[in-house]
Length: 468
Image 1 (cartoon, helix red, strand yellow):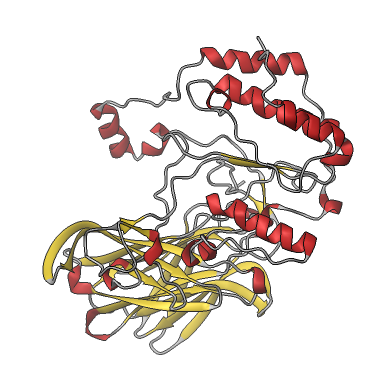
Image 2 (cartoon, rainbow, N blue to C red; image 1 turned 30 degrees about the horizontal axis):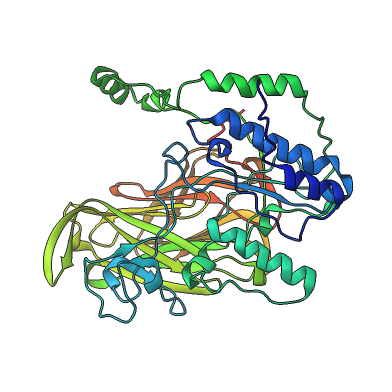
């Protein structure tokens, strides 16, 4: 491999060697060294060289945090629709806590001009891109699944500089919605006394050879082009999952996140459905993060646009709840143009809720939350509260982590609490609540319970068999 003759890192190399780095340095790689698909080998060399420079000076490295991030996804990294804000002046787009105004997150708007429906759209977050943090406080290959964006680095600098100097610094261009939804990276760090892992240095020549070999690899695209016959067979035999690209086996240690988020449904009188969105603050105090949610109505749905009813396919709403707050939003069951209603809610780090049922009351209300020993201490289990308006038999079925099925008989006017234990799954849960004899009612709850303690990545995604 021909290492570049000109030293593009000359000044950085000199400042590190002499101990003259400023408190904050930005390294913006030239195009050929920026890890774009057209030249991935140069980008790998650039990153390796930067880390080599930093770690050669122990006095510099022991107080340095190196953050590597990218500016675009190129379509290779993501599979999930990014979060965007509701328009706080347009109820049909969703809802946010009263303290948040989202007008600056919509393109095509001049805040001084009257707002025009359809002339603008939310900017929101982009598709996810990789970020790597290397430092003496982030050893061990932990993953972090808090929501971050390009302003998170700036928010981290605000926190870092204020802590280091005692002077408050604030970037005024970060919108309220973004500042609430996107973290400041501090959840990625752990105390120095937890950093016990020993990392062996790379064998330089072998590593450079692997970088050079990347030059001859094709662009990412090793997907499996399926025939219609394969798809039909997989659907018939329920083996479709076997055809989908899978995450590598196993789990990784995973940082604790400041999430205390809940979403529950109530079926009110006159065919009204109400979702309650909550972002708790009792467990993590001032570190508690706001909640972003996306709600979908799969299938045909009737809504009002420009004052006229219109049938749409897969309508979607966005929600934002600041820490310590809760908001409600209502749907009319008759707006679902099928025999049943169906709402699906997505949040951060695998948070998922699905609410399905007949348009008439099923006689059962459910509330799901973290089990608390007190307002400041979570057990790591899930607390399921069932309230019966008529005699029902309830089934709680585990979908992923091997817990036995539970059958609960409820009398009219009675309620009961059931605990879903998650110790063996690292806080992860995925279960469905159904009613015996009611083929339409099904409520599914999935995610990870946060306790303030570090855990593991999702065993289901890592295909770890917990049923043994």
